[in-house]
Amino acid sequence: MNIYGVLGYPAKHSLSPAMHNAAFKKCGIEAAYKIFEVPPVKLPVFFSSLAVKNISGFNVTVPYKETVVRYLHKISEEASFIGAVNTVKIVRGKLHGFNTDGEGFVRHVKEGCGMSFTGKTVAVLGAGGAGKGVCFHVCREKPKELRIYNRDRAKSLTLYNRLLQCFDGIRVKVIANADDLCLRDADMLINATSVGMRPSDGMIVPRPALHRGLFVYDLVYNRNTALLEAAGAAGCRISNGLGMLLYQGMLAFEVWTRKKAPKECMEESLRRALRRR
Ligand code: ATR
Image 1 (cartoon, helix red, strand yellow):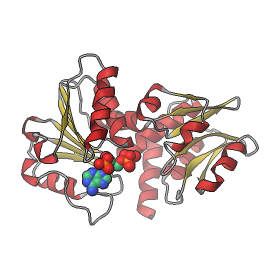
Image 2 (cartoon, protein in one colour):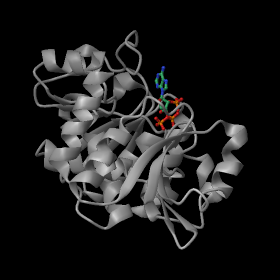
Image 3 (cartoon, protein in one colour):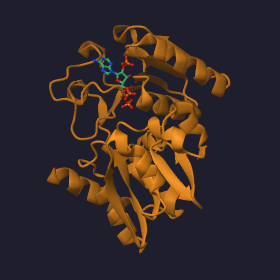
């Protein structure tokens, strides 16, 4: 039996086992998806025992998305751009790294929410791991303009320069202050910061900036953040990040099995696991 799992510390809270085990069952694949909760001191042992444990692939979560890169033999273009990996596939003992978060986000917005980025003005909050993945994939969709705000401006400038190197003719602006995002003429606002993860977190953009024509997406998946509540009240279309979690999982499943992921079954298991929490 092939073994898959999620590597993290902590990792017990992960919703991925429910989603992937349901998918393996649905597709008749003899595999099990486990939780690999590994403290930092045991990480080298985890990597040296992959073959013995018959592990064919795994997801990577906090705090290892960047750390794992040094253990890999090959990494995909997007994972290399982001500098972080969330999916590893083991092929004849070689470890291949991928990052399905950004593509998961874009696929969810396009297929799940029925929206397009092409020709749109898109504002992204955050230039950390999640923000980089989102910006990379949004740029592939040829937006009219991408505006990036990050508290640490040096990070958004680095991201800006790398996007210009990767995407010919792309229009990107770095915004120094969230109040200057100029959402009036924007079509989409994406929160890729960790602000909102804690229930006590406040808003990152001023409420009056939210307007009816704006689609607001928050990558936080387990509830609607203060930003989404305010956006909903302002008449915006909104989405939390549960769909992104689903799509990044579907993409990981497809990387591992080369089979089409069973969307409905994975979504149902994910929602059920979230309710049980
Ligand atoms: P992830 O992999 O989830 O993106 P990360 O790489 O640690 O995690 O990035 C966290 C993001 O949330 C960053 O954009 C961070 O901004 P800084 O680069 O300025 O630290 C952002 N963030 C975290 N706390 C924040 C806060 N209180 N206000 C604004 N941005 C915040």
